[in-house]
Amino acid sequence: MIHKNYNVSAWLETAVAGIRFRPDRETVEAELREHIEDKTLDLMRIFPDMTAEEAGERALSQMGDPEEIGRELAKIHRSWLGYLWRASQAVLGAALLLAVIVGANYLGGGYTGWFEPGGGLPMDREGCSVTELKPWEGRIKMDGYTLTMSQAALYTWDGSQRLGVALRTVSPYFWDREGRFCEQVSAVDNLGNRYPSFYAQYVRRETESRHYLYGLTDGHGPFRQDYILWVEEVPPEAEWLRLEYDWLGRSWSMTVELEEAGT
Image (cartoon, rainbow, N blue to C red; front, side, top):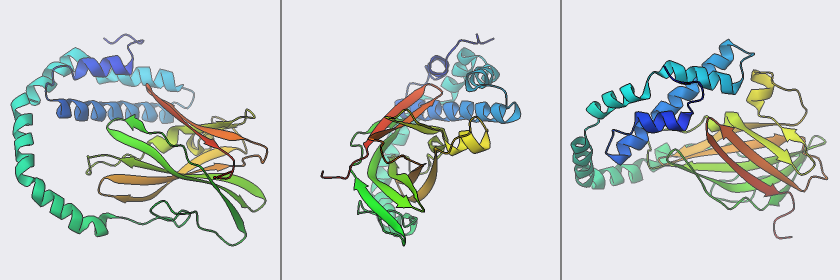
């Protein structure tokens, strides 16, 4: 029986402690975390009045005893299998690299047209004025992914001002696609305005505000996934806006200064 205050990180650490091969341990931990997130979201959909914390605790309790799960995982993930896999990588590496290079043109995906690929300036649309901003320059590590901001711009369109931000996740695990974090990103500006996610406002009906944020997939490659986040109804007097993520023990933030790049 798992105590209700047993947090996700501690549960995961116990469950994967017996897996000695580090890549296997990290992969299994990420899969278990995603499974917990899925259970949490399912509970929140089934029980609309349940908070994220309550749903997370119940989801964790349904996963079972982490020590018992850990013993079973240790039997499955033998360390010698991991090292054998490492050796096979050396043999297959050249062929895989060639396949990636040849297939990159087919796997590259498209983009929405709001931002030019390769870090170019935002594209103008009829009736829309665009102000290029300096993107946040940091890097965020999250479950094996590196998250960066490649572009940011303010759009004035249809009498309102919105912030567009281009994000990119990069991972060596080309077979895996990270796409769920956009549902949990919110924002706040220096005036105190909160921008809930589209998911929170329109799917879960947690709040009602003319300010909100939503994300779109904007293309992909063998080792990357691109996204556009739109923050709606940004007031002209706002000086900065901070993107925030806080979900099941993981958190990060990115701040965009709302002044023209180079000024």
